Length: 293
Ligand SMILES: NC(=O)c1ccc[n+]([C@@H]2O[C@H](COP(=O)([O-])OP(=O)(O)OC[C@H]3O[C@@H](n4cnc5c(N)ncnc54)[C@H](OP(=O)(O)O)[C@@H]3O)[C@@H](O)[C@H]2O)c1
Image 1 (cartoon, rainbow, N blue to C red):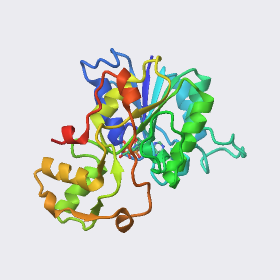
Image 2 (image 1 turned 120 degrees about the horizontal axis):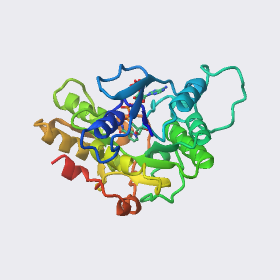
Image 3 (image 1 turned 90 degrees about the vertical axis):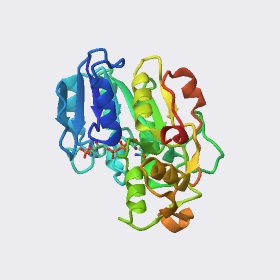
């Protein structure tokens, strides 16, 4: 009855591991926990069975799932600019059996074969931002390669396993460790230059809330798409201001800009509506004003 966390060296994976291995964890009730890493060495976590895994390798995925036989897999792995990792699976690392099945992720193929429950973490980037809000019934309309990769993964997983959970989230904030907090710190201390956009709206979530909610979603009564985002929609600049204040830095040092001036094109306003998911969850998905106060 093993729970397997894929991508357990990342921001979210580390927190999932922390919560599942805590002595008083309400989520795992003493069940074995296994975890995968790719490039970063695993943390020293007694009682966790670590395995290297490259999600671009179909063989590695199938070997791991068929030998470990976990009852549940939470997939928190991704690489922003890497389609094979984020959407599908094998490319150059696969055996020469092209053409591959179109679209499906090989993790979902493996878990479907072994009747393993799959919880897949997705993103608000599957949406364009053209609609005022998006609830769990909205169809993806991605406008970036990352969003397209996430939408492709969602589509194949849902087709292969209707009982799988697809959990869409937004900017993940985590006790100073997230890239968003690190960037604010670098900007506010002058370690880097740049600005934060005032027209780029997201619903940031705290990594502890996100991990706890994902662990709740391992319950087999949950299936399909769920939105796990914080209850506040705010710009990256406002988020930066809250982060700076929380870290004792001067928010006035954070320059403002319009999105077009600070980076590659991306959706502007991604307001995910999580009410439907939140109604069923015990975990409360706090807004950034609360968790950064
Ligand atoms: N961070 C955000 O603000 C944000 C926003 C929306 C959605 N999300 C979604 O949330 C999830 C977790 O994000 P995160 O911020 O925790 O990510 P992260 O910190 O960047 O961690 C990514 C994880 O994926 C693993 N990984 C990367 N390439 C891999 C490969 N080819 N094979 C196997 N594992 C691989 C990494 O392993 P190594 O470190 O060992 O290489 C790491 O454990 C992702 O699905 C992401 O799309 C994140």
